[in-house]
Image (cartoon, rainbow, N blue to C red; front, side):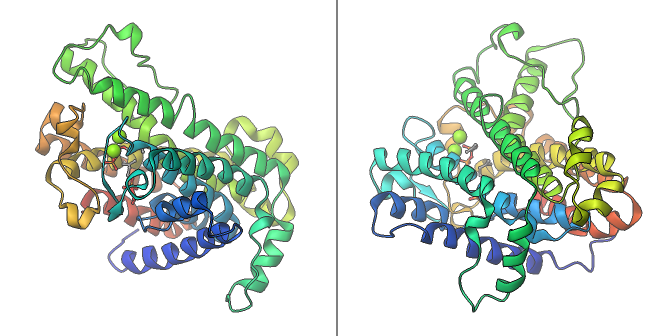
Length: 376
Ligand code: IPE
Ligand code: IPE
Ligand code: MG
Ligand code: MG
């Protein structure tokens, strides 16, 4: 599985284009003159790498499915991600002025409007994922128009939709991204101080790997545990959900759903689910856990040494806000090594997929490598 001949930048560009077309269609359902819609558009259409929806698409492709089936949930995830960025930038949180190369939502609009635009993006994401036929294509000029229309008509089994709603609400919510943001805000207050007792830290992750820790806890190792959990929740959960959403949208399901899975397999999904469904799901999850953590470690590194004009957001803010980050804890070089180990782990999980899936997972592999070397 060699990515040398794989053109990742072409792949990212093509998929980003498709996602943005759909995001735009979603916004166009509303009156564009409304202040709320303008603020939603400001942040949602400002660019961004679209990494999460692209991961969903790449996961579908890895299991040989039709990526168009994952478009509604992929867009929903990008909407939730954008809401989280709008709120993350607010004065009460990171207080940032620049995002995706333009003024943050609360700078361009009012603080209240930014909060509400975030709320609206989050809420509307669930309208889209629960009723994907809403984004049927209207334009005849669209080259996918005909086939997509038919795909959304058969798409998808309501149990799959329910599974997707549950997946993304769980990843974004109380035990997911929002709790990660709480830990991030709390972490800012004890960067240079001992941590509170581990009983209060909720160190146990629901997911076992790659977050195992030894039994002896020094202050550094406690902070490491805290930080891994924080990053897993704040960033990892949505990245993991993106990969899993791709798999689920074509019927590749987790173990615990094995019974539901049998009921909901429609003809179109039969091939995929019968072939290593749950093992494949677990390997993709392991891949995503590793890149999810690696992604936030590289975000921390870029916050120290990245170029704001390339990143489209400020650097140095973690230090200003006294954030607990991998570079503050391990130093830059060790943080880079750690990110590289995680990416190796991600690639190793792909190498355990069935042979034909391995070939098809080249985009996932190339994305893992890109996460390590990204400059924005
Ligand atoms: C930034 O996410 C916030 C984190 C969770 C690290 P991205 O780096 O994916 O931001 P965009 O979507 O490309 O703007
Ligand atoms: C943002 O994390 C994470 C979420 C919005 C969930 P950061 O605060 O570390 O990311 P940037 O650097 O502002 O993009
Ligand atoms: Mg933050
Ligand atoms: Mg921030």
